[in-house]
Amino acid sequence: AQSVTQLDSQVPVFEEAPVELRCNYSSSVSVYLFWYVQYPNQGLQLLLKYLSGSTLVKGINGFEAEFNKSQTSFHLRKPSVHISDTAEYFCAVIKGGNYQLIWGAGTKLIIKP
Amino acid sequence: KAGVTQTPRYLIKTRGQQVTLSCSPISGHRSVSWYQQTPGQGLQFLFEYFSETQRNKGNFPGRFSGRQFSNSRSEMNVSTLELGDSALYLCASRTNGGLDSPLHFGNGTRLTVT
Image: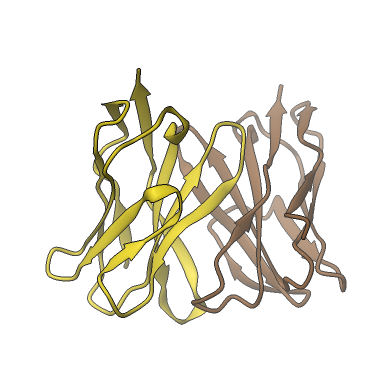
């Protein structure tokens, strides 16, 4: 069965510093990967997705992620965070032919001034 | 284009009661999914409806049910509420459920069961 592991439940980082949020998945077949962001008191919105092609995917708000098949990882990065990036970030993978998403537990990004 | 609208935004119910939550998807979206989000369990998939038919179902008891109408609007019902049903319930819509069809979420209904 496919699963998604987000290794850190919280990541504190200073404003304007770089950040990496880690995501690993387990699957023996091709996967399709997503990062969603949830701002306080809101629903989730799509940050970026990897379906095929270039392994470096650029998303909204300056975020990018790199698909690494050998390490089964899809880590999210931003070179310089802003206070407005305070949110919870979810990694997800498509499960099988019914396109159902399997979700990670989420990582709270905490920006320190 | 209007986003996904969920009503009500907040709800307080008593244990044993039943509740109905509503979701209006983005115009043109035929798929509606429901999720339960809690601090302990994270984001858990309830079910997905596509063209009025339940297409996928998560591992929730039969007290949780849903339906979708011909205009793609969806409702979720929880009967015989338990304290553990307190959660943020999120609805998400997408065009047809294909790989290139991302989920668009509403802001959720926060249900508190006392």
